[in-house]
Amino acid sequence: MRWGADSAAGRAAALGLLVAMAASLQVLELVLPRPAPWLRLGLGNALVLVALLRWGWREATWVALGKVLLGGLLGGGLFGPGFLLSCAGTVAATGVMVVASRLAPPLGCVGISVLGAVGHGFTQLALARVLLLRTPALWALAPLVGSTAVLSGCITGVLAHRVLRLFAPARAESLP
Figure 1 (cartoon, rainbow, N blue to C red):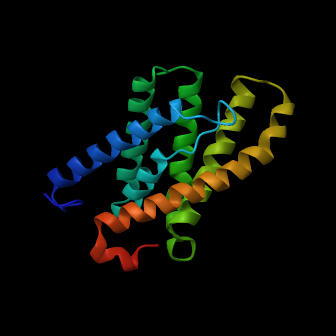
Figure 2 (figure 1 turned 120 degrees about the vertical axis):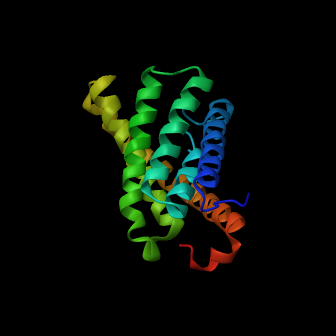
């Protein structure tokens, strides 16, 4: 079976693989050193972007939700505060990337990914403000969240572009 086969079975298999890989990356990031406990690159989001640009918003949503659920289960934090923040951020990031993908030619993979990462970071910050730390001082983290979101969005955008080119070489020239 070729990657991204147009058959229903081929698409289901490819999406299952993307979910498994995205969840694995999410769990891997739990053990990598970070400058702050809540800062991660979000490498699994690159595979959400791959699904979005290859098939569309429904498939990207499946990969995003599967990544969060499986990652939460494997990481041991299913339905804890971190899971809720991750889920909200992932849903927001996916929504932002879906809208941004409509502007794909001028934005490209990196631009779409950066916007998704910013949406993810600020959604988590807002939710943490409402649910966990009810102090406006939490917004002092906004510049750090924004700058790390731009950096991680660039990295995941480049990764998504390379994965798309690797598995769809005939269409690589038309990819954003």
